[in-house]
Image 1 (cartoon, helix red, strand yellow):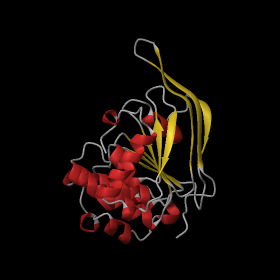
Image 2 (cartoon, helix red, strand yellow):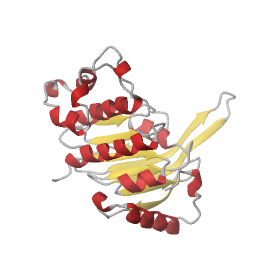
Image 3 (cartoon, one colour):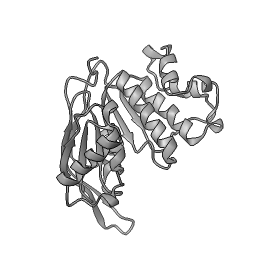
Image 4 (tube, helix red, strand yellow):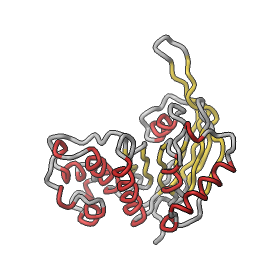
Length: 253
């Protein structure tokens, strides 16, 4: 299957992003942050907590326009952008299916979502309300909502954070299953090395604040071949490439 993430890569060139603290002190979150995500690629922004990963996503989503620099989003069959945040942000008075369909453009409002719901294990929950769902299930609905619009680019902000490891692992595999069925350009924020090694084609390693790119780690091994031994080998290779990075600060592999 050909990737549908767009004919051009995601290009980011943020010269600087500075906040002001409550005391009025300037805090620079990003400086000279430049990277690309290739068409149809699943990339992970990996870095320590508080380094500016989520700030980067907010800029790319148009939620923060107070920065210097530029970026270019992929454009494919649509210019739609999918996003999955740490909190599911579902409307409590709408059912699972209604929450997903609300995100669809008019031209897709009656789209058949059976396969999507089935792949995420939501087929029997379409008529439930958010209050009837666990956090893990609510996250699945948020993921379904993002993929349902068939976006040209997908942004994910630590979608598995605060879940127990068993639930998080199951959800990682579900995301890979849905993404593999229709690979679109994707950029996910994480501070978990193992998660990045499991999911991505490319890891973009960021420094501490102000964030800039320390380097790239490309993974060409098919995801279905990333068994425990391969994952251990990848983690070793990552350590060898970035010997100065304290992995304990950004999640153990």
